[in-house]
Image (tube, rainbow, N blue to C red; front, side, top):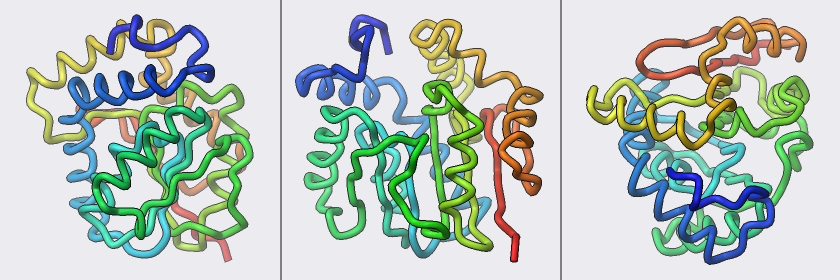
Length: 217
């Protein structure tokens, strides 16, 4: 999306700006949302249990994932106006029994230990001031045998035309922050610092992701 649609300090975004943000996400990045959800289902099967979407934005990803899984999803967002638009989107899709909007910060997730079977975060990674701390929190909240899928990608099912267009939009929007999604060695270093050993980095056409599995006793 173009920069004029997002305030310099997006945490102060008002409801009108948040609705415009939602509109631009839908117009520009829905192929990536649909593609990534399809990839998740193909790779991990129909997910069950409790899910958390960290940095859910206006919940477009959580809604798509909910429609293709059996998860009950907690959609966490730190910006009040964006979280409010997420709530409205969830209500419009009649998914209030399965998606719960939560106002909170990724650096201090408002969930108990071993809360979630599946945690996803798409496109919020570059926003985290202390990435090591967020990964620690994600690992803490994961259940034993739980899975986290964290990063930013477009999914393997987008067309080449869609991929080129969305990559260009992201580069213009994020500028220097876009580099966060092309540094696998840095991501490995961050996850190791968080004390997590059982993970793999995916860096291909599908995007840039960390897949984390919690296998501790």
